[in-house]
Image (cartoon, rainbow, N blue to C red; front, side, top):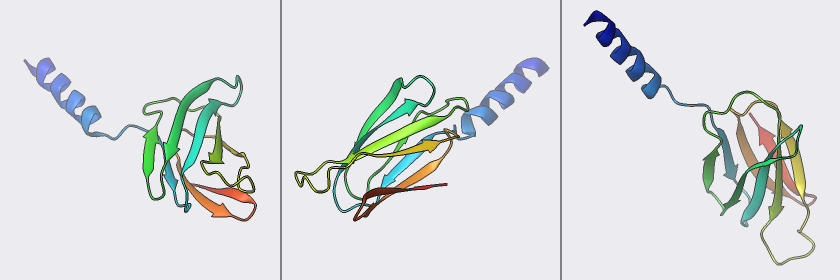
Length: 109
């Protein structure tokens, strides 16, 4: 009985602990589409499309690995269509996307 109670307490502790996730927030004035790749193998793990102000959690529970995040503005203005890329060294990161004249700028925390 004591072992069962201990197991239940441990399970509840892990269930209440938030899992690590890559969180991306769009602070641009236009929608942004993108993908998350493994840096080493270039295998795509997730794709996303964010409207202005939207945030999304991706890759919940992934181990530490280097990731590449690629984004492109989802607009019809050919002057703004530029692929932006950044590397993330921890899947438990927060990324803000901000628009600049040179394309999308990443702020990684």
